[in-house]
Length: 310
Image 1 (cartoon, rainbow, N blue to C red):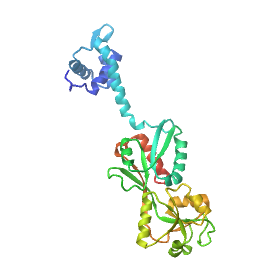
Image 2 (cartoon, rainbow, N blue to C red; image 1 turned 90 degrees about the horizontal axis):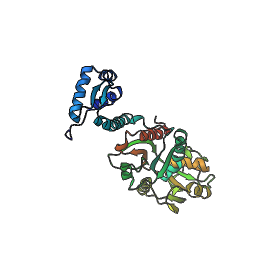
Image 3 (cartoon, rainbow, N blue to C red; image 1 turned 135 degrees about the horizontal axis):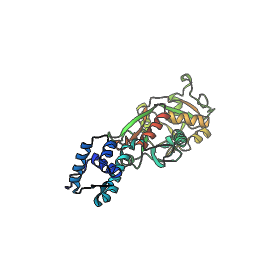
Image 4 (cartoon, helix red, strand yellow; image 1 turned 180 degrees about the vertical axis):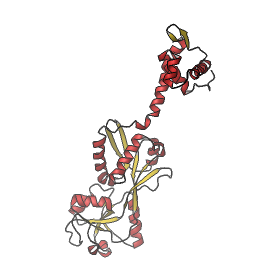
């Protein structure tokens, strides 16, 4: 047999069935074929493997020593093909045991991660979630499978990366409840007729979150509007921001989603930003290599469900 003359799938199936039935007639019935067709297939398989494989005896079609040696590998191949055909249904959240790693911003640690973790614990208690940073290594991590998803505003990811928009963001300002110079409704959005104005915004001291692509949009807007902030504190992320605004008279300017969560959690005043800042969309991103992988599809569907997209 030459290296290219691999047996067809139907011939391997015949070999498997004939080994069990020891009858060409019963093998033909099991395969839904005529007896002459099965006889032709058997002749082709004998030719390719250079062995009679089965010989007629009073006990039926008895396998030769070569057939005995080959039945195990043949069945391994057939079982592998069956598993491949059933791969689509290979992920059962209720019984799955695997790690799912998501690159996200620290804002998503506050706004998304608790909800996502609760949903995963309900549906897939054996799944372990890991949160990782969004950085210059994110695209490579998605391609290699080191990370499953990236969730955030990540405009620099390559054009080959799949994405789904989850929600859009505009900008708000946070202040402590009862701030002596800033009007607003405690812990909720307030009407525009009592909104913070630019003059008051510039007069107040600010806490600044310097990290993230969104921060660049805010800085560009400040430059366009020729607004200078009096920065009293700069933070590398959103961790601790709510407690700081709650306990001081500092203002914070940030995307609405994280602002709303912090306002509700810490009883803060939330108002529209008094000058225009370019909004942005938060998306989930994944690599085409894993687009059809069942576990990935389940995770992406769960994230979309959390934002009312399914």
